[in-house]
Length: 122
Image 1 (tube, rainbow, N blue to C red):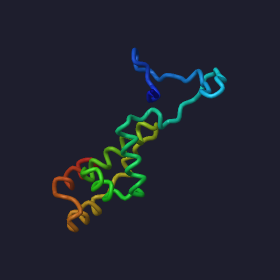
Image 2 (cartoon, helix red, strand yellow):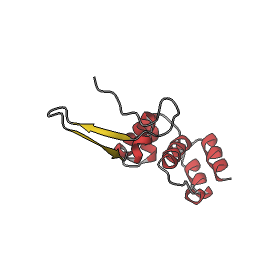
Image 3 (cartoon, one colour):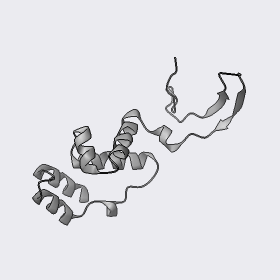
């Protein structure tokens, strides 16, 4: 049975390091400190979201439909993943008020979603 790679210590929750690699065929073992990808620090739910996001080619409306979540939830999940990867989520990158009103007028988002998005701007 193959288990998923643990990235955090089950005792203290600090990041683990990989120290040994082994070939199952010839049993060659390599020991050293190996670096994990930033993506290894993401949870299963975050990795699933990234997979859906890529499958939808970054189209947030398609991600909403695929996952059955609202626009602000998609944005929140993206911001969470960006932060988890060690990047800042700059407020200047947030959606502008005119775009929110336009989306509301076109029926792309509900009034509640528009209010939520505008509150994020504050």
